[in-house]
Image (cartoon, rainbow, N blue to C red; front, side, top):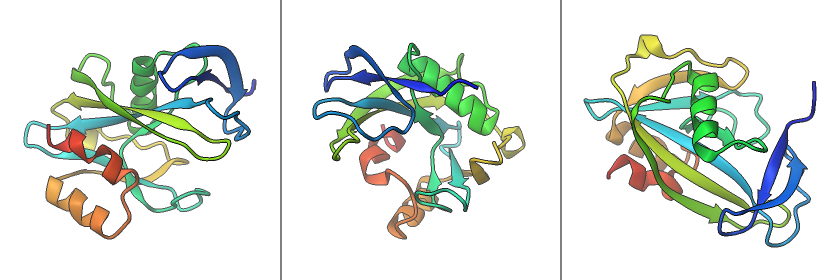
Length: 167
């Protein structure tokens, strides 16, 4: 199987024409990779959250929303649709909603930009089909439940993405 490649972007989300191997954290200053997060909101104002597998190197057992890296040549929207489908079995490609905002972080050799999407869909817990090597649990949670998990320090990216739950 070929090594997955990611495009390298500048701070303005312009592709540089260069790529990197997935998770190759040797990026130059000013280089960024792009990732996506897909928030699904139900009509009763619950949100699909997933719990990371316990063997994950980073933040095992923490709660999050589905997402991942944008592959080389892929658009942000294509990536979020693919990631949500892979991780949860839910197809958001025709759902109401879409791009909300982005944020970025600078870390030595590992600068990144995250595009945040929200999709409004009527889903039920029985619709969730977890990717077992990624997640050990998934559920529809209220804002209060998400805030409680975040207050316990166990919800990834909460401070960076919390606006998506309220707009």
